[in-house]
Image (cartoon, rainbow, N blue to C red):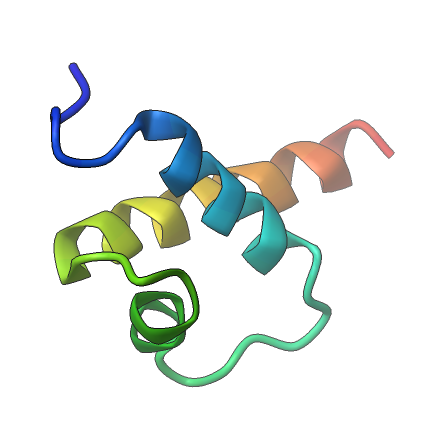
Length: 61
């Protein structure tokens, strides 16, 4: 269930952006907090989602 303070598509948008980066920073959640104005828990959720996206891309490539 999504939180009302931020649509799930914003988390997905951040995750897609992160999944497209070849080399991630040491703390990707911190980057997403600043770049997308996310709260830290939202950024962590986006990082987890980006990891799954990258894995799915590798499996289906």
